[in-house]
Image (cartoon, rainbow over all chains, first blue to last red; front, top):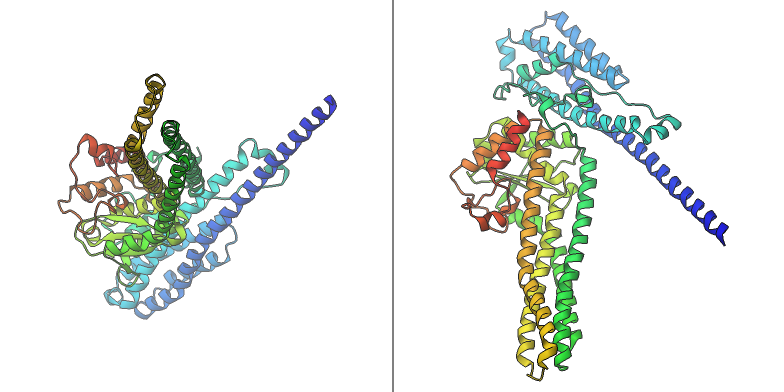
Length: 208
Length: 324
């Protein structure tokens, strides 16, 4: 009689531990899938942005054909963005494209006819909209990465993560310069945001 | 504004949804306890009366109570599915797309990306008083409405902050919670009303054949039970408004987190509350939905106990503290 009780208790404990174990594993998988989902949110916007570039270059060329260097810079950055595989690569390429576009728009300032062109203005406003959306998508993505990485690095899930080879995800970092420039350059209709609604201090800021 | 001053505890939408589902479950649990107490009071009255006068059938009360519960439940389910269309209709809102109102539409788009929620439908109320509300039974069926006055009187960052507050209501499942609470309150009020009628009716038909000694304890129980039943509708609605105010604070905080700009939300609330115009499209039934009470009521103790919104000064103070 006594042994039956002991065996029963042991079985109960094993079952409970197993359930906890499965729950933690599933939680990690869910969290990782959310990161992937959030990444696709950024990816969509990056693709939209890249797809507008040729159109923009063509439009500017029509008015300022000899600014070849600027065009090349933009085209290079776009190609790099399309080839980027990891979030870090994409972020770097996107920041590069931001810088290149900044030059392009600075150059465009010298061509009043271009400034007045309906097509150009529309592209400009669309690009600024995409830029904002990238900032928000990044905020969401980084929040999910933060959550996933936290699970990965804290007890008790850290043991399961180690066992099944879960690896931390990369944050999508925006370089400070590129971000503020975009806000200033494109955001003409925005009443001068002194400090842009600071799209995330991303991971690095909040993890500490 | 330095982002490090935004509340450090990052709350993910997923966790918020989880927490709010838990809260709704707790609420229903609390409701069950409350109704159990309520019907215990009801039962003791029935027992006392039926012990004295056998002509009162105790099962009748239970039948009435069950019927009342079913009616309240049906009303609740109906409210849950029909309230959105009704609210938008009484508010005189019309749906707008990207073509009609690009600015507000784009902001909502951005915020839905930032919060990971599906894109809600955007509605406009042609009223010069600035205000906004969100409704819809879940994030997949969500609606955000703004007034013309809001678009005219706020700058872009303030508008973004207000819409972030509304998106937070959606992400927090506040409509579901508040509908559940409203059903609870309605059910309690209905049952209390029925019980009191029944009690007076019972006391009228009761003949004076009760022994004096045994009646004393019964009388005390009866008094307590009746008092509880009389008070319960007030307790229930005070609970409801307390929850409503707590949800507003939460939406302020998570909205500030979403738009990363608590200061803009504070100044938007200031503009909305200082605006002298009352919102004609709002009434007592829809006032709780708006970002700030549209009825411009004066402050008093009773008003603050049954207020749908926390004092706006307090909300602004907290938001400014977040913004540093």
